[in-house]
Image 1 (tube, rainbow, N blue to C red):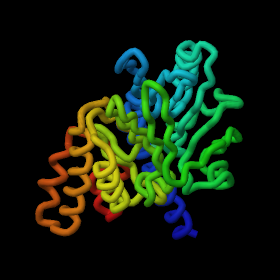
Image 2 (image 1 turned 60 degrees about the horizontal axis):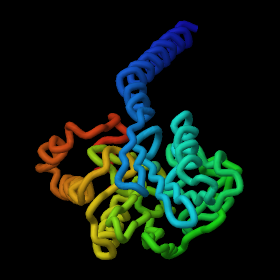
Image 3 (image 1 turned 180 degrees about the vertical axis):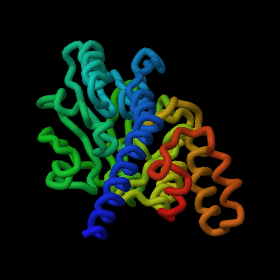
Length: 279
Ligand SMILES: [Zn+2]
C-alpha cells in the first residue's frame, strides 16, 4: 500500500513539474513568438505590388491588367485585413489566390475567397489537403510543374518544387519583370525553420539549387521575416549547409550553432539542434 502511495506521489510531482514546465515554456517562448507573428507591416514595392509581412506568413497582392493575384491568405484578423486590401485594389477584377503550402498561417484566410480560383502545389490532393488544413475551401488548380501567367505588364511563373522541402507541396511565385521571388517557407529571413512531418533538409538544399538555376534572384519575399535582397536566400542556404557540416563534423557544431543565436527560434522545435537531427 505504501509503495502505491509513493508511486502516486512521485507521479503527481512529475505531472505538476511537466505542467509548470509547459507553462513556463509557453510564457517565455510561444507567447512572444505568437505576438511577433501576429504583427503586420505593409511595404509598397511599386504601384502594382504590395507586400504585407506577418499576420501569419508573408503575403503579396499583385495588380494585373485583368485580375489581382494574392499570394498566401494569412490567418486570423490579418487574413481579414489582407482580403479587404485585395478587394480594394481589385476594384471588381477577379482575385486569384496562390497558396505556397498548406500550413494554417498561410491558408488561414482561404475561406474569405469564396468562389475564387485557388492555386496550390500539385504533389498534394484534395483528401490530403482537407486533412492538413481542416478547410473545405479547396484549391481549384493543382500545379504539378509550373503555371505561367503572361500579361502586358508582367510574366509570372508559379512553380511547384519537385521534391519535399518545407512540405511535400511547396509552390513559389516568380515575377520576371520585377525579379521578385515569393518563396513561401522554403526560405525564411533570420528565422530557424520548423521541420515538421515531411520537411527534409536535403529537400531544402535541392530546392535552393533548383530556384537559383531557374531564376535571377534579386528580391526575396520569404515565408517569414522581412523581404530583402538575394542575401536572404544565400544566408538561409548557408544555414542548412552549416547544419549539415555540424552533423558531419560534430567538433565544429557549437561554433556553427552559435552563428544563428540572433535568429528567431523556439527551443526543441525550431532550433539548430532540431535541424541537425533531421539530417
Ligand atoms: Zn509553413
